[in-house]
Length: 245
Image (cartoon, rainbow, N blue to C red):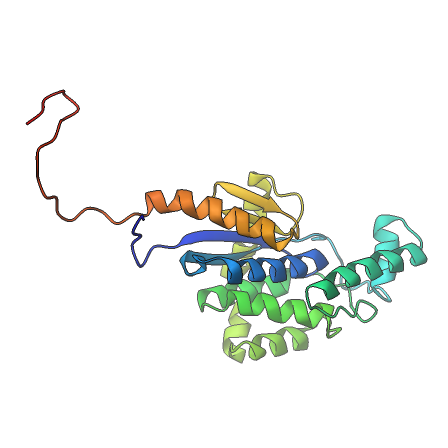
């Protein structure tokens, strides 16, 4: 058995957008995989920002999500509703209750800024969960300042911290950095899971796919994170030069 430094962690990065229904489903499946994975304590999870529709203009509101999909994808309202009904069924399978008839399409950039700040407090996963719930199940408008502040307060950020997250160029830049990095490594859709910067899983895959990905990545990672030898008991041996004594 390889002994790993107790402070070492393998990083799993997830590019995600709050506006993405499969990202929330993927989050649930990954969480189930972590519960089933014996070495989950060795995983350090980091959420990364992604935007499916960065050009969305909040000053031109859509009546509902069906209208948005109808215009964006060039389908009828009936087809848009059918598409969203199918997604809601997928969500229900992992214990999520989507209320897409109440969902309000909005630009997610500001919410991502809050998530970036939350990450500095160790609250990244909680922030991601809060905004997913606000959008998909509570019908909250993420373009509204009141919604953003309320969501931030729910996860434990103060009003001053939320103000910093929304007004500081630092957290705006962190979102841009994630978006640029996604482009550089070829992320074209989300959720996109990257294991130890070596393996990737795209989409809301079944739990067993995530478990297998974790096992493969962690086993390889362990070899590089093994504890260094602190003492050696000498005995008869042969060297690579061919001498034996």
